[in-house]
Length: 154
Ligand SMILES: [Zn+2]
Image: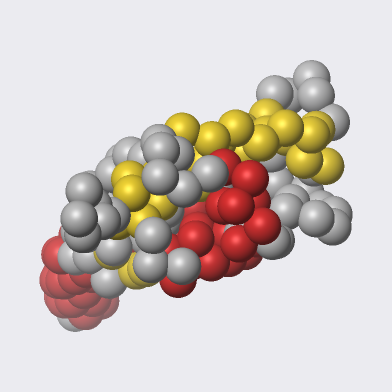
C-alpha cells in the first residue's frame, strides 16, 4: 500500500516536471521581452545583433546574454566629434542643431536626442550617431554620419 502511494506520487511528480519543462521550453523560446540592446542600436550604423532588428528577444536569449549591455562610452566626457556625409549642409550647422553634446556625462539619451534633432531639421534622410571609447580612456568620442536629402533644382 505504501509502495503504491509513493509510486503514484512519483508519477505525478514526473508529469508535473515534464509539463514544467515543456512550458519553460516553449515560453523560453518565444520572443516575449523587449530587446535590451535596441535603445543602443537605434540611430547606429548596424542592425541589432541581439534580436536581428525584430525588437524582441526570448527569455533564453536574455538569460544567456544578460540585460543591458556594458558600454565603454556611457557616462564619460566627450572629447571629439567627427562628421561624415556633409556636402550641402555643414558639420558646424549640424552640431548647432544637435545642440545636446554640451554637458556631462554623455549618455545614450543624449545620443538619441542628437540624432532626433538632426532628423528634425529635415535636411537629412538618415542620421547615425555612434559613440565610442576605450576601456583605458576616460573620455568618449562621437561619429555622426548623415545622408542628405536631395534638394530640388540640383
Ligand atoms: Zn535588438
